Image 1 (tube, rainbow, N blue to C red):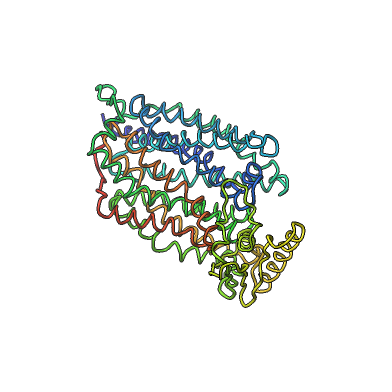
Image 2 (cartoon, rainbow, N blue to C red):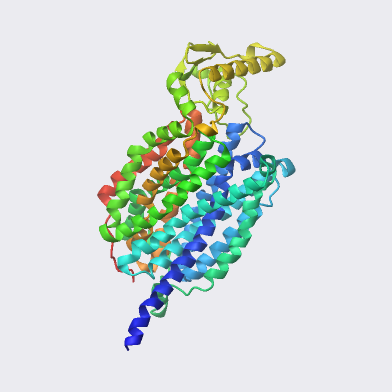
Length: 552
């Protein structure tokens, strides 16, 4: 009897370790697959959207990235129902296979130069399949771990699932950096970017092998034995007001804000470094990867903290911090990563004075506008390509646009008044003069590697990720505890993937479109600041505390 009592805890701990390890590792590999596209968006824009101007190509590449997020709620519904009816384990085995195969095929897909418009179309279809897969994966893994965990350690144990998103992104960046370092920049840009996608087939095999060793969740197994499995999860989850109310509270009082904090602290910070601050791609990836590695334990810390002090106060504090500190943190990031640019922005602000009717938004989803027909568009297109922040000032109707750089004013050409050859020559002359004027007042063409303060950049990105960890670390336990076991997979998956798929997944596209429309490199931050602030206010009045709730 004594031997049985002594032996039981180690066996239980070993089982908990297997459950957490297998679930987390498999989910990390799925996030690796899903995030590869975002980390390589610049190269994907060059190969699959090469028929449009550079700014539009990048935003279209981000839109294709967002397509995977668009269908995540559908994946949540489809696989959530399967998970509530068939079981947790088999459901996330199916989602893993779908994700791994779709990612592998991206590595083989010919580009626009080879098969024309079919290339971006097929790419978007593969992103949709990835979105369906990740829509079913997260809920299954979080529920599986939570339903094995003791009540007083549920936040801590499910926080390992929360680290998988950051770990998957970190793994993708490490593989990308290894591929970059093994090849010349030209070779990586031409074909080496495909290597991380092709490697995913190996990760798929490892993940399936590990997860095949797992048993079904004890809560689901008990429901199955007692014939208590829901026959109609959709109707129970969304057709009855008490549960639908919880779905809406979870979405608008918790997940929407958490989603924008995750994508602001990871992908948007990476894109901001690379495109707006002109830090070279390898250095930007390295800095984000180091910050991710150092910040990853924070997810576990805040999950553990939520077991002691509750989920609600920690998540709300993270949302409030996002609304208050994003603008100051990104301005500090500019000063740390590209101090020359920061000084030039302060000493010699740039403005475009133009007739508002002469200006277009510097984004054309059709891809037909080259922004070279009107003087205002020519000035703004030049600044957008140079990643220079500027203000727009009104000018009298019919007057050609002027570009003011510090104390110097340059007139933009109006091609409508010139022949084709003369117009092209005038645009080239304007661009050369404007580039010279920017250089004269200190605007750099790229960040000086010796001027990048790596420790400061890493600390600032860790601060951004701390905000993410406060919102995200306790959230898996919170969502699992919020909903009843019979319809838990369906109920929690939908708000999670609407929040992260739509509010979060569209953040890079929306934020860069706002930057293109306004000319202000910081204007895109209004999107996460407003969403996080609104979620904080809603959550303050609606979120219940769930710590310690019985799951069965």
